[in-house]
Image 1 (cartoon, rainbow, N blue to C red):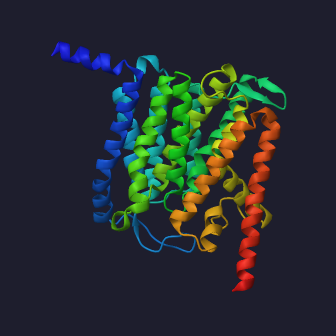
Image 2 (cartoon, helix red, strand yellow):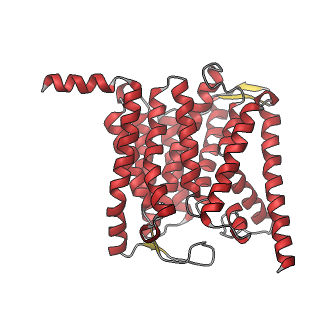
Image 3 (cartoon, rainbow, N blue to C red):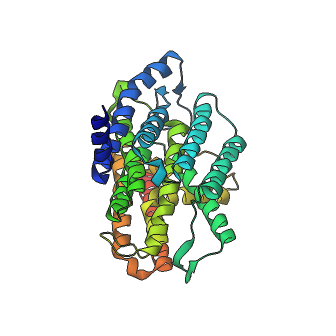
Length: 366
């Protein structure tokens, strides 16, 4: 028995094998838990019911985020070495907190104030206990290292934005999960290239947990389910942790297989669709003198649906645009952080303008 234990420990000490085990474990847990979640939601009548602002027309089981949460947390706790990854307990604690917030919201619906309060508690845990924060602006406006107070303020703002922007784009089948799969995959490659095993494991746990959900969400038909606020908030918290480490590594190490010299702009490019969609929706709502949190149908995916695209076509197009912007930004890093960020904004405005004029043209032809 002792020899068997030593063999297992030796296998897990090989980072590539450990990464593969976490990926397979998170996938398996998520995959096999989804049918149980579907049965439970149906028996308890827990559905996302169609209303005036949704793009689905049938009662659909929610709580897909439970499978994502289980896949991520169990695989990390089993195979991530906590002694060499000091921040793991704070990541897991934050995930547990948003899990219960999201779960209650998916079942009973909770107020925006309570959700924001829970997110602020997560921010406190990650920044002040886990020390997950930006310490370097990577040359934005000529600024590199920043003070502790500035670091906390910028980190808190970015955390709030990222945690919520995934939730805001979760409006068509496969979009939020598909984009998150792309983001997790890119992060996994980046961290692996920099020999950062801990965050490669975090990335692959997210990747593995999302793939089964994506399959059920897009191709499920009678077994379709949504991730709900539970899943979106969990993805948001993991994304926050990954983007902080991405920027911190890039600021101190521009060598390696994937060299990032304009990390803040590259972070924006990686989350291009969620960030730009949130920006344009909030801007339009404020322009119309409405609350930025008042739901409407001005998201990019709503416009593509009105142009006649299906859910899958809409998701594929937006994911492809996100990938294009990231790849383009990677090769244009020599522009610098500010110029590249401005270019990314211009691309977003161009996409919005094209969709606006296509919809006008369609209305004229109707």
